[in-house]
Length: 154
Image (cartoon, rainbow, N blue to C red; front, side, top):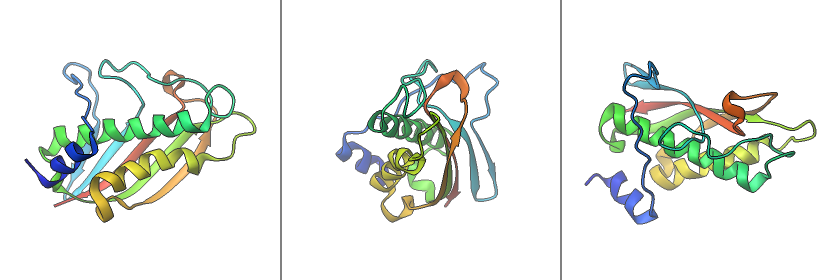
């Protein structure tokens, strides 16, 4: 088992499994040693939203944090699907989170901590990354957050 796989096991984290066949979805593109990951949503293995609603109106900050974490878990599963082992991740370079924000909500970075904290838990220093967190008027399937990222591969 890989070093990162052992870390996931020690953290009690099981990555989701998704059937991507026939969906026409491109979750990632690899160019050289960079992997560009499309926006990942907080969805279950069937692609159905686990969380929905605007943060600050329908969804509280703690729930939105968990939604961003689920985006990260789905992203880790995509990385593993594409490159085989998470040990191939040299570092997480950049992340962008869009938060489905209610009119008065302005704590988008706190929502994105759900994603960022997970990357550091799983990869240690390799998981530290530059990031942006912005509010959005609406997101696909009315999810509270989506996250895209760039990772450098070994």
